[in-house]
Length: 219
Ligand SMILES: Cc1cc2nc3c(=O)[nH]c(=O)nc-3n(C[C@H](O)[C@H](O)[C@H](O)COP(=O)(O)O)c2cc1C
Image 1 (cartoon, rainbow, N blue to C red):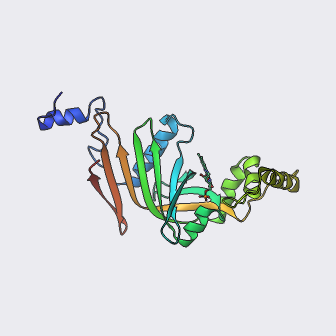
Image 2: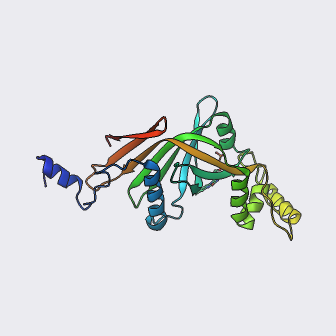
Image 3: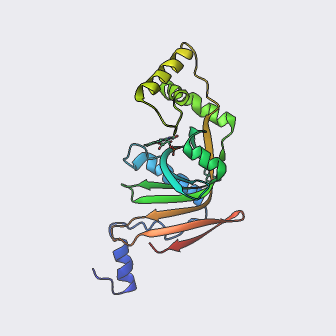
């Protein structure tokens, strides 16, 4: 099929994909992201469909990025919550500069999302609740690991795991105060949909005061 009329171009763009996702762009990106996250949890065919690639920047503006797991999502506000060590490199950077950017990619679904916004610490209650839901190994790991610090040798870490296991033997493992959540409040959310025709779609939502405005971007 050649792309020499408007109708044939549209048909080409939608080959094998009759449901043009953004024919009508939804007004609310938070609800849309919620639907995408739910869909990915069921259909992404990847071990961690909730992975966020979180980019932070140091005080010189030098970026760094790493995967973290998004654990809670609020589809009213678009806020995403992830958990980490408050002494880690990412946490030090976020405490100094709360502006972050996060990427999500679901390869099989040909979907990607980019979110930028500000982070703040989750409440103690949220961090306690999530920590209590983790496996005991993960809880002990949070005590044993000085995340992002130099580790002299592997035995040192195993020794620390052994020590904390002994310390909390026979009882619950409390949340260490240096471990907890961050809540990312989005300022912009961009949705990308890949198409077999290679005529991909992008829609960018930006917050203007309290309202979301959107526009399409060239792919
Ligand atoms: C799939 C995956 C999920 C991860 N999830 C988390 C997470 O939720 N929290 C976390 O602190 N680190 C997580 N990590 C480890 C981080 O990517 C990173 O190595 C660690 O947080 C230290 O990063 P930093 O030194 O930049 O602070 C994950 C790694 C992978 C591969």
